[in-house]
Image (cartoon, rainbow, N blue to C red; front, side, top):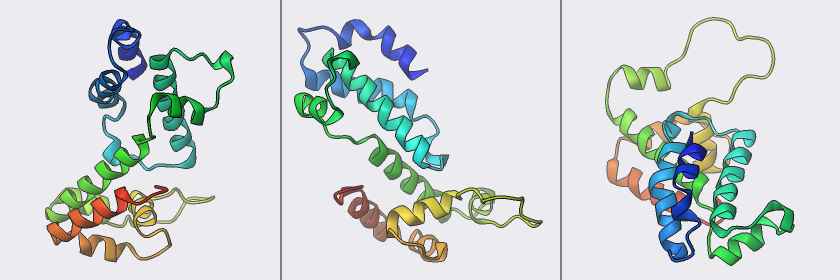
Amino acid sequence: MSKDTFNKMKPIFINRNIKLSIKTKTLKAYIWFILLYGCECWTLTKDLKRRLEAAEMWYIRRIMRISWMEKKSNEEVMEMAGYKRSLIQTIRKRQLQFFGHINRANGIKKQILCGKICGTKSRGRQRTKHTDSLNNYVTKKESSNNELIRRTNNRLEWKAMIADVCNRPGT
């Protein structure tokens, strides 16, 4: 869907008279808006991260008019464009903001997000839960989700924590 929109806007993105900075702002405003629809509820797996990073590079390569046949690495392309990857970080920031919003409200959404389902577990490795994924991103280790949920109650502390986590290098 987002690639369709990108292709519809291709005359803007391949126009040589438009600055690269304006093209990347347009990409983030129009294309990412469609690509990231509902990302607050996604559980980011390694495969999904890989696909999202590939999509991000696909867009940048098209804007820069660099074919995969030119055998340039992603790092070279990003350096040429003066671009830093930020799609995954944007998704995580949105997820943390949404998680805090849901946990501050006492309603059915909070029960759905943080509740337990009675019954037996299915066979095989269990799927990664949304809260576990966020907790691992925030703390970088296995720990209780209760601490993460407790932190959402203080809005200022939660906002500061989101800013700190999203601005640290290597995320």
